[in-house]
Image 1 (tube, rainbow, N blue to C red):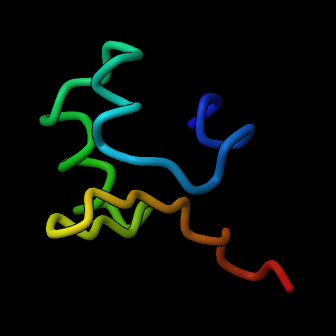
Image 2: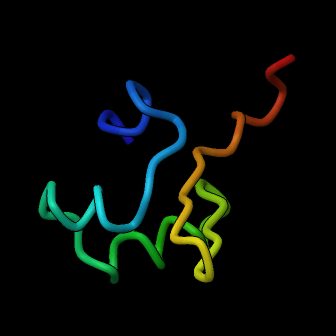
Length: 52
């Protein structure tokens, strides 16, 4: 999450280059932390609950 706080929107490819596994990305998506578009490869950090 520290990596994504600096870049709230990135790609699966960029995350893989920074040694994130697909398992970690999938788990974060399942936990509701990320929005993942598998067609375009776009990964976006979801806003924290209760934030404006």
